[in-house]
Image (tube, rainbow, N blue to C red; front, side):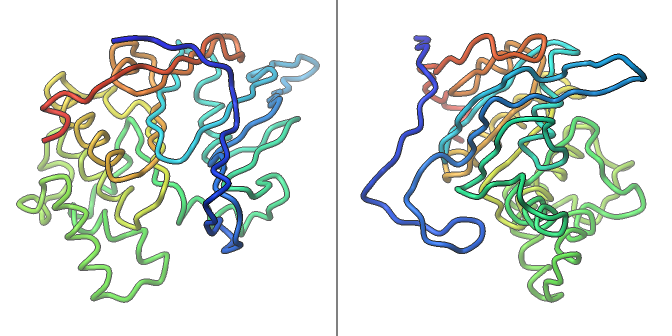
Length: 264
């Protein structure tokens, strides 16, 4: 495996026109672009700089791992990318749209349609079945019941859990619960999957299965952004961005060729 450290650049395919998240025609360019992002939290008179001048570009279809230890700023960075929080200073462009100019309703629409979230703690509703957990965000999107059923079953099939669709979280293993969470994230076909420590609560076998699914999704063209503290997990991505003390220390492209198990 060869590591290639490259400068942060914005590649533009001048021959391709696409629609951005607002439906506007635009040139194909970076999907995510952060410029000089600072995030400052104030505790009384004390200021804590969680992010310090972070700049990065992620192209469509990349598989990126953002890795750092506890307190490094990786979770804060995830919140910025996922439109869950806004920076104190800096610029954030998502698919050609200035995120910092959007109103709360527009940000909510992006989170619902453009980004699929996967969390370490699964975040499943305990009283609902696997099918109902996957279906839940589609109800908020006001999708018709027949369409919700079709989409939910298709998503559960992608993670090989059709045989568990009537089971509640308490009746499933941790790995199965995380696969339900992945099905929920991809049900609405978002172009971006943002995974926060998706293998953190899993054994090695279940963790490998989750990584296989993420690889499979990336192979269909989805942009995968994986947040982790685990260097072994990060090394399975195609690009690793290392963050420490709120600053990007390293941005490395890996010459990773998916193993046979990742392609299955």
